[in-house]
Each structure stands twice: as C-alpha cells, then as structure tokens.
Length: 535
Ligand code: NAP
Image (tube, rainbow, N blue to C red; front, side):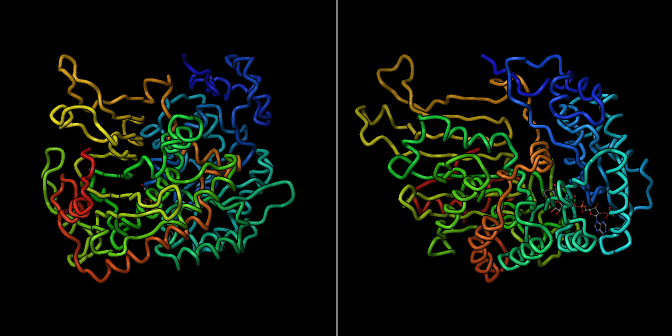
C-alpha cells in the first residue's frame, strides 16, 4: 500500500505555487491545492515569509546544490509567497546577472523538472548585492536592500544568512552581520545564520568560531550544516531503530559483534585542492559525517524528536567514545597513488595540480573506536573514508555475532557469514538484512542471502536532496538536524589526538587509486580477526 503524499506532487504543487497571492498564508496555500486529500489534516511544512541571503553565490556548492535546492523547494510548493533570495558576491553584477546564474544552475542541477511558471515566480524575488566580505560599505548596502525587500515583498524582517564561503571568512561575515545590526531580530521577526562545514579545523578553532558566532547570534539561531543529517536515509536510521520493535532488543553488545561505517568516494580532488590539502580525509569526513552517523546508530532513544532531546542523546554517545590505546595499530591513513579508476589512468595525490610535493595530507583515514557505556562496551565501531576508492558508497553495517550453536554439519555452514543489517546511505538508498538460508536441493547447506528494502521501489517519489530539507528547516526554524556546538566540539575532541599523532608520522601510506585503501587499514582489522566489508 502506498502512503498518501504529504506534499502535492511536483506538477500540481507548481500550479498551486503560481496561483496564490504573494501574501497568502500557509493555510491559504494549502487550501488552494486541489489535489490535497481533505482527510489529511496535517499542514505541509511550509516556511513563513522570509529572505534567504546567500554568501558565496558563485561558488561550487551554491551552483551545484543550494540554488537548485531552492528551486526544488519552490517547485514542491514549499517556499513562502513573497520568498526572496539575495545573492552577495564580489562581482560587478546587476540583479539580472544573478538571476541568469541561478537559472543556469537550476537548469543544470535541479532534481525536479524545470517549469517556467515556478521559475518566473522565484526569479521575481531574486536580488543581488555586490561586495567583498571585508567591505563595510557592501554590508551597509545589504542592510538597506533587505529593508527595501521587506517593504516590497512582505518578508517581515525575517532573514536567513547562508555562509557558503571559504571557512576563513565565517568569522568575518558573522562580525559584519553583527556590526550592521543584521544579526539582531526586531520584535516579531527572526534572524538565523547557517554555517557550512568544516566548523573549525580542531577543538580550539571550533571553540573560537563558536564564541564569535555566539557573540552575534543566540545558539537557537545558529544552524551548523552537516548535510548528511539532511539525507533521508540517515534520518531513517532513527525510524528504523525507534519506530520498530524488531531491532532494538538486539541493538547492543549482547548481539552486535561490531559496526562498520564507511564513506567511500571514487573521485579524487575534483578541483578542490586548495580546500582539501592540509585538511584531509579525517577532518573532512570523520569529524562530521561519520561521527554523526555513529551517534545516530549508538545513541539511546530520545524522549522526542525535538532538537534538545535528540542532541542530548547524541552528545552522551560522543562523550563516551574512546580512542584505541595504541593509535599506531588502531588507526590507519593513506594517500592515493596513480592507478586506474573507471577505465581511466589517474595520477596520484602528490601529482594533482595545486598539491605540494611534500604534502602529508591523508586521502584515506580509518579509526577503531569504542563506546564506553553499558549498551556498547567491547563493541568496536570501525570508521573509514577515502578518495579514489573502488566505488562511491556510504553505508552503516551493523554486524551481528555468530549463532552460539549451529546444529548442522561443519561442511554445511562452511561459507556462512555473520548476520548484518546494512543501511545504504548512498547510492541505491535502502536497507539490507543479510542472514543464513538453506540452499535449495541440498540436505542442509546454509548460505548467506539478502533481504532488501529499496527507497526507490517502496515509495513512489524520489527522495528530496539533503539541502532541500535543511534549507526548509532553516527557514522554518526547526533545528534537530543541525549539530549543536557541544556536538561539534566533542567530535573535535575525539579527533584531535589522532591528528596530533599522525602529524608525527610523516607521509601517509600509498594505495593505488581504484583499490580499497592502504594495507595498514586491512591489518588493523586483521588484528581483531575481522575484515572490511567488500563493497
Ligand atoms: P568555492 O567554490 O571556493 O566558493 C566560495 C565562494 O565565496 C565564491 O562565491 C567566492 O567568490 C566567494 N568568496 C571568496 N572570497 C570572497 C571575498 N573575499 N568576498 C566575497 N566573496 C568571496 O567554495 P565552495 O566549494 O562553494 O564551498 C563553500 C563552503 O561550503 C565552504 O565552506 C566549503 O567548505 C563548504 N562545502 C562545500 C562543499 C562542496 O561540495 N563544494 C561540500 C560541503 C561543504 P568568487 O567567485 O569571487 O571567488
């Protein structure tokens, strides 16, 4: 049986979005939708009137993800009437130039079909303010432009500032917003700031950035992006665990042997050498995405899905994370060497354009962590991430202990593996349960088989992009999917000693591009009598 959709399908939503007045309320937008099931009393999550100010509009993230996601929200009927988008960049541009950039980005990257009527409505609200982040005059002009937009488009002084800018400019822009008074919300309005990753490069810098941001905005107005939390499959970890009774009784040290969390990329630097070198795989991926996944897999059930309850449980887990006593054997790091990827010969990391020949940045990182609490004591959590690996895949695999007794002959169960529950975050989003089954026609031979749930097959619509969900949450003011400053700092606290240790170890170990990482990563597992999952 298929679920009644909460939102109108894309085509109908587009008609609704274009037929209501610019000042209509959420209820009016909903009522104007002829396809809405009248029995469904839930209101869709639609943002109230506001302006989204995007810093860094000419950047890669804005063009590939943010601008298309804004359009997709509009296409789904989820942007408020009067919604306005202000782009800020160091270009001698008119509004029309930014409209053109947005148009091209939407055409190239939007998830939903391009519709003239939706685009027309969105483009009417697109404005541009030129300037450098260090230019006071440009921010004064921004403040004036926003006042004008409030008057012409009824946006009520509600502004979300999205910092899609190089991390060194996060404090600069936040201080400009404070200086101009743009960070202070007059009564009855709101001001929010969205900060991209990486949030700091160690505990000290993350703490300083938190302090700077907290001086301008209250914590409830700060939205730190970890776009993994916007992914449907990641949120589904919570549904899987807490909406069912099937898994929770065995989700603990009595049944779980170990957990493997993997984010593998097949690409190399993809033109981002300037960002990546000096940061590396662990800071880029483990500190945020993988530790957030670990927290969702390992946390206790929150009393509700509100931000405080959820963040409290994640924090408790992060506080209980323990590093291996010996970092030399309990961690691994590598850098890709030349090799073959997707049928093409590719160069090694040190030969990439813009990478210094003596760089010690790792492109592969693996850690073995433990969680010191009653539920997880003694269960290793293995985390790995890397570039130029065999293929692009992100998954969480909960691997269960073997059955305590097998009443079959040894031959019949020779190739039987361990039960596993695998959450596929991307691609082919879904869940697989692996278990033993009798091989047909044999006396009692037992082998591994898989039971699959695929998002694409079970639900009729494609999943929204993570940034659609997160942008909507920012405009609504719904913070559960954004890490709190304490989570960010706890994650750096876990990683800092590893980074300090690696800094004393010289060059990371080579692995040929297109393979699954350095030999030390396999050795780390072998010492525990385990292997990495073959993906
Ligand atoms: P990017 O391509 O380097 O873009 C940076 C943007 O900031 C450009 O629009 C650039 O404008 C602008 N900018 C830089 N210095 C400026 C200044 N002094 N004054 C005004 N504008 C200035 O970076 P990105 O890849 O889009 O990443 C943006 C943020 O998202 C970063 O914090 C990054 O870590 C994070 N992030 C990116 C990705 C991704 O896939 N790209 C993924 C996750 C997180 P110009 O065109 O004038 O240089």
